[in-house]
Length: 420
Figure 1 (tube, rainbow, N blue to C red):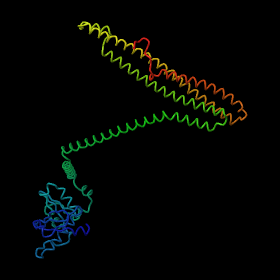
Figure 2 (figure 1 turned 120 degrees about the vertical axis):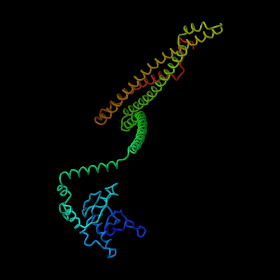
Figure 3 (figure 1 turned 180 degrees about the horizontal axis):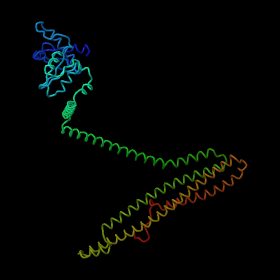
Figure 4 (figure 1 turned 180 degrees about the vertical axis):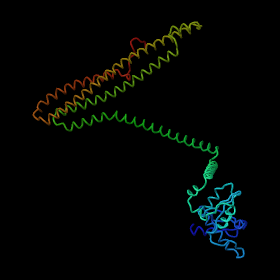
């Protein structure tokens, strides 16, 4: 024990007032000295029995000389632990606060008594037991346990296990507290799961928005890329034949873009018209449920006057005309779908033509870079190519005009077999 720790220990009578002087910080351990109970103040977890003996002797010697009974050095004294008729000598290096707290609820029945080592040896000899070795605690715990009989070692081990089980039961929380803790844990986990689900939904929405944006960029970047490529070819072109090919290529690309837009518009209009026709037919069939003759036959017995019969007949005629008009619209939709397929075929042909023109342009560039003498035949070949391209472009323009004439956005005349 360090000198500073020993100076903090002080012994006083148990019944003495505590207001006279504040005790040092720490715990108190009661010790009996000469049939008198004293409280050792300032005991910490590092305080040993040797420190307590020294503090008790210093307190005893500080009193009047007439009352001094204990004489000698601290090594001549030791602490004796008594409990219900059992007692044992404590080694000097034993932690007294740890021993005191280990007794728990049995502390009222435990006493620490300051005795002389010589008196303890004489008492053991009087009872006929083996002589007490003065410094038996110098041996290690393992050697001391091995020196005990087997039965005593077994009982010591069982006692230690029982004590550990009791301490474990005392430290174990009640079942109600465990249930409350589990409920709180489940609630916290549920809250965390809900937060993760919300975050996943937000990420899904962000992913969908990014996909839509990428689709739009991919849809409109094709035309820009073709225009940029054609612009680069136009800058690198030198002869008049190459310039004409570039102009034709640009015109064909513009017509293809216009044709794409027209096809998309016509496809949307055809789908809208088809949905309207289907809805009208379903509504008519749902409203009537039967053919015109069946409705007239079912409604005939309930008619009372000729005026109501005439109104019903006119309604049936209007219904028949509507049905015929719907069938005619379906036929027009079929024709529009055929035109749409033909437009798609023309668009595919236009793409092939653009690829062919690009191949011719690259071939002309190679000829100009490798064989300069062959540039004389370029105008005639470019003129033939231009004529062919103009013919194809006229065909594309005429097909575009034919599609515009069949567009549902214009005023479509009623079918020949209807009265509308």
